[in-house]
Image (cartoon, rainbow, N blue to C red; front, side, top):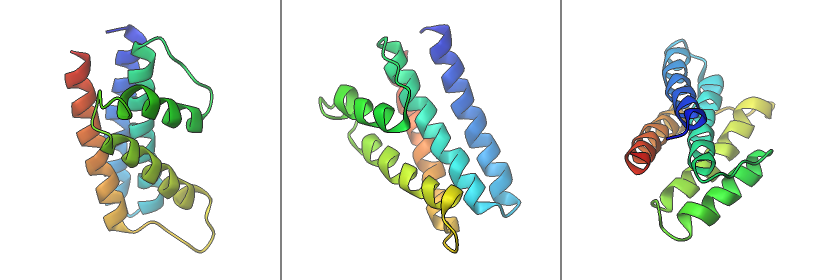
Amino acid sequence: MKPEVEELLDKATRSIKTAHKIFKDGEVDFAGSRAYYALFYIAEALLLERGLAFSSHSAVIANFGKEFAKPQTLNPKFQNYLIKAQDRRNIGDYAIGKHLTEDEVREMLDWAKEFLKAAKNFLT
C-alpha cells in the first residue's frame, strides 16, 4: 500500500474519532461533516492506490463509482453512502434553518466505519 494511501486511511480513522467526540458534545452538524470527510478520504485512498487523483469532491465520488461500484469491485452501496453523505454534509455545513438529525449522523458514522473496514480488507 502506498504511504499516501495509508495516510488517507489514517485521516479517515481520525475523522471518525473526531466525529464521535463532537457528536457527544452536541455538535451534530459538524459531526456529520467529519463523518462525510471520513467517507471521502476512504474513496480518495482507494482511487489513489490505482494511481488516480481528482481535485473535486464530485470527481472523486463519480470516479469511485466508475472504478469500484459499477464493476462491483466493492459493494455499490458505498457509492450510495458517498452520495447521501455529501448531500447531508452540504446541509450541515451550508444550510440555514435546516440541520442534520442525530439519527442521520449516527447512520453516517456507521457507513464510515463499514467503508473503512471494507477498504482495508480490499487493500491488504
